[in-house]
Image (tube, rainbow, N blue to C red; front, side, top):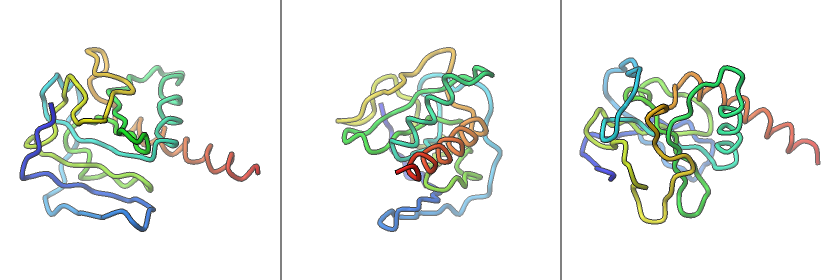
Length: 154
């Protein structure tokens, strides 16, 4: 279930001119590492679906076999959301993405899709409760490069 609280915010570096750019005014913190069991606080990184799908492929076939946490898709399938540890949004700066900060008072790791029309691309699992932000950042960067190269091969 998705719990929306008063203390949520996001940090975005979206390149879409129509996107809003809310910012936070809290002191940066270090992301919590380790597992985030069900119904524990977490942040959410949202990216365009095309880049997100490439990143999921990169993460799942990576030679280091890094765990990929839950990944949501919206009903229109135009964005994907990666569940990451709380505190990630305070330092998130990946172009074309946004990270919603909750400070433990908003988004919690749900066991069912949190909104009507949304669904799990990768559902929550005990062995991968969240995606490591550094690993996700690297996968998103690689995905962006791959898509740029593919788009340039018209």
